Image 1 (cartoon, rainbow, N blue to C red):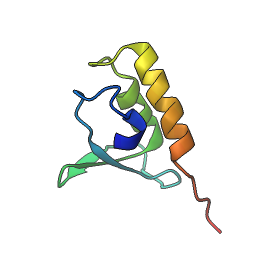
Image 2: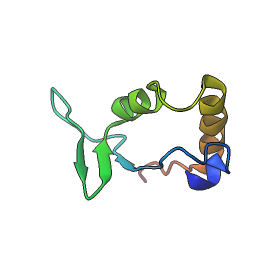
Image 3: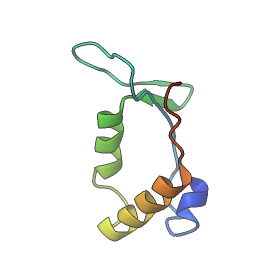
Length: 77
């Protein structure tokens, strides 16, 4: 994430998240924090990233595009 931001949003705190893509979270999924790391599911993470905050819409889009290029998804074998 820090590399993806590349100084464009240097005043925005960067938080760690562990997102389980194919995990079963039950009927009412509840994300939680452990040692400063958010453990969550994709829809919650997307909601948090899209939430109003310190960045304008263009900057969020720019960072999202950089993250999409930097992150590699590894499907189950």
